[in-house]
Image 1 (cartoon, protein in one colour):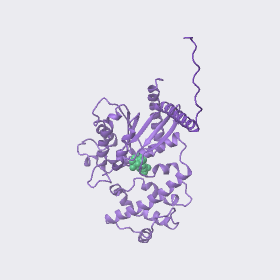
Image 2 (cartoon, helix red, strand yellow; image 1 turned 90 degrees about the vertical axis):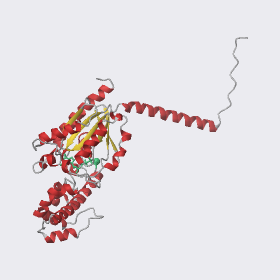
Image 3 (cartoon, protein in one colour; image 1 turned 60 degrees about the vertical axis):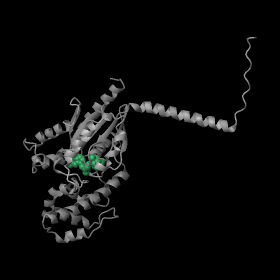
Image 4 (cartoon, helix red, strand yellow; image 1 turned 30 degrees about the vertical axis):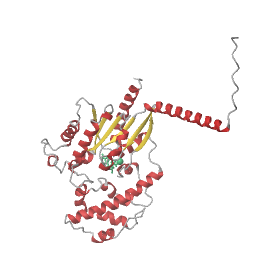
Length: 362
Ligand SMILES: Nc1nc2c(ncn2[C@@H]2O[C@H](COP(=O)(O)OP(=O)(O)OP(=O)(O)O)[C@@H](O)[C@H]2O)c(=O)[nH]1
Ligand SMILES: [Mg+2]
């Protein structure tokens, strides 16, 4: 052996096809590496799931967060909400007329009733000018006002009086809904949405789901990697039944059982659980005329909101199989920006602390 190494055999030149394959493979490797880096970077982003039954205020909570941390509502969205407000006005007035009729209450403004009933809003994006005083007159009619407290039994949107009482203004063709109006619009969520806010050093990923019974099977894929569940529930639903069911089923009871499924779910075992007892404004108003014990006969305390909201909180907490599991509770009115500013600021402060602890920065 001379110790010399033989020169490497000459490589045949790369064909056009091989060069193309090599470039494609390198591009795939680069993409995989970019995805891996993105995943590592995003792995510690706080992920929040807003869960709860339909109409409890989940999307309204998200709207408040968008006002505080996002860029608010763009012109197309505002226009979308303007149209929904008009639909809400027409549908709820039609429902109140039906309820007044069913109650045997005679509507005094006969001509306005006939005018309204002859109107069809289908395919329209504005209300005719002559309809605005008609609706305003009907809204002041004692028979319609008597129908309002019965609206919830007939699934009329709770925020209907907010818009009906301002029909002369919000019904104008050039009306631009305010943020407060937008917070009051009901538009059921049908598919899960993701919103990302940059707050401090973190990108918060927030998922808003549809809470109606038929939509809850969409939730589970989002349980993996969820850091925090914001479970939104309506205090005021204690005297209401679910809309979608054939048999009457109490909405508060449904929400409590739904909470049990979430708090005991193994995939969420490490997630923080924050419970929002929402719609405290409607709740307090209802308790002036409705006895809680008529709907929850086991309750034998006074009919006041402090005692009853404590009782309702205990019903939720009793769902935990692990009694050590922490559940932070906020009593909220999600349509009230001043109330929510404080609640959301405190929430984000806590979540930021948890997020920093997760990456070992605390
Ligand atoms: N008065 C009052 N109304 C509220 C409150 N929170 C939400 N609402 C209203 O309740 C209605 C339902 O709220 P959403 O946020 O759409 O409910 P959701 O939980 O997202 O409902 P789904 O999308 O069907 O699951 C809207 O008209 C809101 O304006 C509250 O605290 N007080
Ligand atoms: Mg929603």
